[in-house]
Length: 306
Ligand code: SF4
Image (cartoon, rainbow, N blue to C red):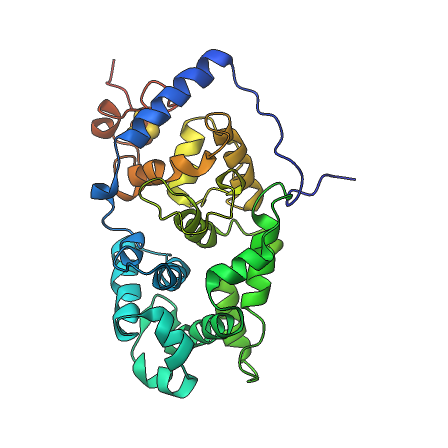
C-alpha cells in the first residue's frame, strides 16, 4: 500500500549539511527583513482592522476565501463586503444575516468570477456554523485532533462541517460549486492555499499573524502554496514537484521543517512578499537578483553578462 499523503508522517529530508545551514541562515535573514510595515497589499490587512477575535475569525475567512487574483483587488473587494456587514461581522452573521436581506445588502458585489449569489451562499454557511457552534474557532477546535501528522484531516472535517447544507434550503449546483471553491478541502487533493493562509493567520502567534487558535500546534500547519511560493521554492531547490497540489504543499512544508521543526510555515510571509512586491518576479531580473538576500542559495540568479 502506498502511504496516504494526508496522514503519513513527514518524511525525512535530505540536504547536504552545509547547504542546509546556509539556507536556514538566509531564510531567517529574509524573515527578519519583513514585518507588518511590508504588509500592503495583503488580505490580512482586513483582519487586522478588528480587535475582537470573533470578528477577526469571520473577517479572516471572508478575506481568505476571496484571496485569489491581484492582492490589491482582493483587499478592495473583500474590504467592501466587510464594510457592508457593519462594525461587527461576527454579530452580523450570528444575529443579522438572512439570505433575502443579504442579497440586497451585497447587491453589485463582484470579485473575478464570483458575484452576489456566491457571496451570500458563503455567508449563509458561515452564519449557520456560528449559530450551531458558537464561533468558527469553536467549530475548528471540535474538528482538531492533535495526534494527526498535519492539519489536513482537521481541515477536511472543518470544511465538511462548514459546507453542509445551510438553513434547510436546497442550494443550486452553482452555489455548491462556488462554496466548494471558496472553502476548499484537502480531501480533493487541492493545495488549499487560501484555507492554509487563513489557518496561518489564526494559529501562528508571531508577526504578522494573530495566534487566536492556540489549541493548534503550529508544527501541524501546511504552507499556503501559491504561485510565488512555488516558484521561489523551486529556485531554492526546496521542491522539484511541478503541480501546485496538496502533496507539493506538504513536501515543501517538510523541507521547511528542516529549518524550523516547530514552525515551518514561519517562512511563508517573507517568501510570499518577494513575489507580491515583485522583488522576485516570474521573469527573473538582474536588478532584483543583485540585491536579493537569497542570491547565494538560489539556483537560478540572473548574473552579469561575462
Ligand atoms: S536570486 Fe533572483 S531569482 Fe533567485 S530568489 Fe533572488 S530574486 Fe529570485
